[in-house]
Image 1 (cartoon, rainbow, N blue to C red):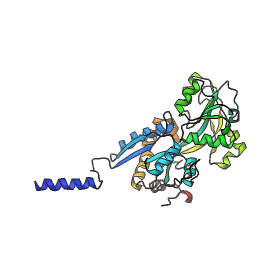
Image 2: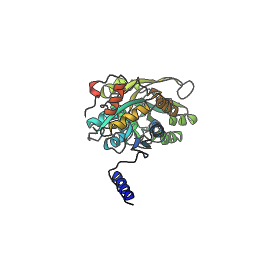
Image 3: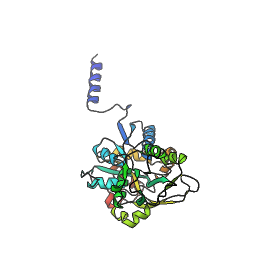
Image 4: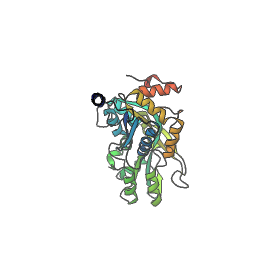
Amino acid sequence: MKKVLILTLAAALVVGLGIMPASAASYKVKIGGGPTGGTFNTFANGAAVYIPKVNSDIKASAVGSGGSVENVKRVNSGESTIGLCYAVDSALGFMGKLPKDNNKYNKIRSMGYLYGAPAQLVVRADSGFKSAMDLKGKRVAVGNAGSGAAASAERFFRHIGVWDNFKPTFLGYSAAASAFKDNKLDAFWVLVGYPNRSIIEASVQVKINLINVDTDAEKTGFYKAYAYSSTTIPENTYYKGMPPCETFQDSTILTTNKDVPEELVYKIMKTLWSSKGMEAMVAAKKTFKAMTLQNNFRGASVPLHKGAYKFWTEQGVKIPDSLKPID
């Protein structure tokens, strides 16, 4: 009886200290994804399934969100353990320069590059629109409020002088595609890897074009103001005969909070950037084939987490001083 009492008290003390038994998950990881129909959500769901398969001490769940900007804030506060964030949003948040938000989200840290997210501005093929400048006075869906898509759209359209002269509608990708098909919108904007499911959905019922936004970006000095880069969406991406489209892209970075344990971040890195881990992500969506050891933390705009620094150093990657851990 005495032995039973001692064991019971010991067990109560262990639980009281927050130390979980070896058989239970030691870590609970929340992965910030994005709106329904987006690539953020696909990655978060895939990672939430794969990580616990490899690590019995990790329990993971995907958390929907408005997208990149919201993930910057949630990761910074610790509401999400890790999250997908665009490099430009991360840099602006880190410095306290997000639109209408002077808060400094400087607890976020980079882990690794996932893929490039090109801006894709969809219009009807018979609309006659040749440039983003032509959308003055028109109805344009720009992404969910709080999303990286909406933030990038406002940056771009403000920079070229169109934002205050059209009707931005804050809709997620799937909802925007549906409204576009029903002729309730003149255009919709996504910032995501291609081919995007929502654009495919729209193209099944409506003949579409993608507008070249690179020319306006270059002409107006957009690339000097923000760290986006030119890229090309290949021909035939959404339909046979589609010409290549010049645009710009942001880098999607897996991001975490500086206070997340180094051991946990390192373990997640070793899991996702293993050969099998990368295969699992590519199986979820071909966009993630860009998530490679060679691309490491390409485009990252805030310092690496200590766990990520340890991982990339072991891979023989040279870490620039600007991305070395600062705490």
